[in-house]
Structure formats: structure tokens, C-alpha cells
Image (cartoon, rainbow, N blue to C red; front, side, top):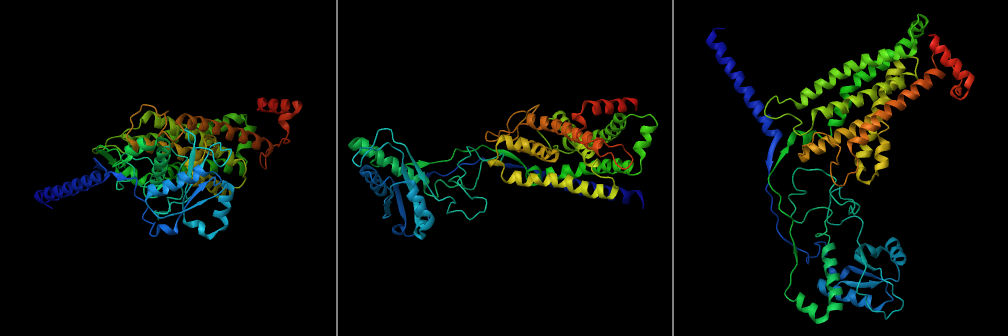
Length: 469
């Protein structure tokens, strides 16, 4: 191959590499917006009301005349020929919903929470009511929309742009397309006309009410992080799994071959053996964590993978996980005396502790802070929750030197809790390791009774034997 051919081949390689890199970067970062939305009338009833006369509008309590009057006026405001039916109490209405097949045609139920004493009482100036709709919205076919999500103030799905940008009405749970706002507006109008009479009528003459979503400015979207966000927690668990499983294998191999007892006989202390294993594995963890930080934070092309996270904080987070996972491996190794069994069962326990995160992620919005923190007793769940918080802040584009604040206004889990639980996990795993090794030291050890920590004499003798070692 002459020099000219070599130079041409080099140029072609450079061209292909440049195009590939350009395409990958373009695929990773994309611009979105700005978004503006069309006004929506809240007087429009749902599209599923093909035949309004087949549907029902429920009111409670039915033994008060003014409640029936308000509901009839509400029906006229909706301008539909819907059936109006009353129930004396919510218990009676719930019985109707459960046992009567006609109840699936109930559009909404209006429950007045006022202190009525007799049927002729007037409507008070301060009216308290609540609307009851069907639990599962009717106008959505997606499996993700399974309730109205009234427990949430904000969306649980973190995005850098607007929520449901293709829906001018805001999308799920559908307060417009389900008819909730139309029913509410008609009811409020009926109450105002009852108290305001002619003055309120003049106010509503020729008046149309529309709702419009607030416009959203232009934003950048990290396609790589967005697409792979569900895989990141599992990816980090897989990254660290070889170290955890190797330390399990090493510890059980020493127990199986009596090497640990041989070291104790030769004058080494028990804590020194455990500490040597810890610092050996911790050294490899530091190397791996450093490589992870380089991979995710160094600007190799145009942008790094993590553009907003603080590398020092991420390093500390993974270091805390490293400490907890080492003690997890110590704990698991004390329950086995055979290498193959320890590696097989240890692998199952290690990954099983992570897959609990899938259930937590599915019902994350419904979990209290105490349950989320309690789930962090598994170091792998704590790792997954921490990685998930990092990705949420990345998607939002929040720059913060130390992420101890909430990832969104709805979530109450912060990184301080996760870091604290990782260190607590390490302590608890170490405590279990100390107890199990003392009671079940293996074939060549000297076991202590299970209540050894409760007996002063045995406890003193045990510590004297450790000091003599």
C-alpha cells in the first residue's frame, strides 16, 4: 500500500467516524418548543355522551328541596336532557353503584355537605360540596390512566418540557374531556344564580368561559438519558455485581478450607482479617467509581452524559453504596460454608434485593416517605432510588453542587435520606455479620450460644479470647 492510498483510506475513516459521532450527538440532544396551546371551552361535554337521555346526574341529599332545585338548574346550564336522580345519603348511592347495572351511566354525583335540618332550609352562602365521578376515566384507553390521581399536586413524571405537549386540554387525567370542569362550572353557575338572582344573570349573559394552558418556552431534551433512564439503575447494579460476588466467593472459600482459622492460630486478629478484605475490595471499588465518573462527566465529544450533576457528590454517593455492598457481601458469606452454594444463593439474593425496586417504582407516588426510606434498607434499592433522583434532576436540567433538595415538588425523598440509609445499611449488615459469625463460625470455628451477648461471663470470656488472638 503506497502513501497516497494510505492517506485516502485515513481520510475515509475520519469522514465515517465524524458522521457517526455527529449523528449520535444529534440523536442525544434535541431542541423542543416553544409550545402554545389552543383555548378549551369548559362548557363542552364529553364525547362519550352520545345519547344524554341515557345518562344520570345524581344529587344528595334528596330530601332537601333547594338541593333538587340547584341540580335542575345545573342540568339547564349543561343544556342537555339528562336524567336527574336523588339519594338520601352517600351510603344509599354507593349501594346503587355496586348492585344496580344502570349505575355505569352515572355522569357525576353532587354531594352537598351542608347542615340542613329540614326540607325547606335555604342554601347557605358558604356552600360546601364535592363531585364524585367514575374511578377510571372513560375517555382514555391507556393502561397508565387508571385513576384521577387526586392525591398528586404535580405530575410524577419528570420532563424538561411541558406535560403532554400534544394535548391542548392537558391530557390525563382529563378534567376537560371527562366533563369534570363542565359539571363544576354548571353547578357553580347555578349556586351563583340562586344567591345573585338578576345581578348574576346579567353577569352570565353572553359570557363564555375558556381555559388555556400556559405556554412553554423552548427547551433542550437529552434523548440518551430520557430513553435509558429505566435501565440506568440496573446498569449500575450489574457494574458492581462482579465485585460483590467475588468477595462472597473469597470469604466462603477461606471458611471452607479452614484458612481463616489458620490465620487466627498464627496470631492474626479477627478484625484484621475482615479489615484486610474490606480495604482490598474498597480499593477496587474506588477505581471503578473513578472510571464511572470519568465516563459520565468528562466531555469526550460535545457534551458529557451527565451535564448538570456534580461529579464530587456522585462519587460520594457511589462510595457510600460501595461500603454498604461490601458489608452486604460479608453478611451473606457468613450464612454459607460451600463456595458454589454461596455464589449461587448470593447472586440470587443480590439481584432479588434490586428487583424490589420495580414494585417501588410502579407505586412510587402512593408510598409515604417512611416506606421509601424503609425500602432503602436494601442497599440495591437505595442505589436505584439515588440513580433515579440523579436522572430526574438531569432531565429537568437543574444545576446544583449538592443535590439535597427535592427532585420535584411532589416527591419528599431527598439524597440526604438515601446517603444516611446506605451508611445505616452498612452498620446493620456488619452487625448481622458479627453475630452470625460468632454463633455459626463454620466447621473449624468455636461457636458461641445464640444469647452470648446477654451473658456477662460469656461475653467477657469471648472478648478476652478475641484479645488473646
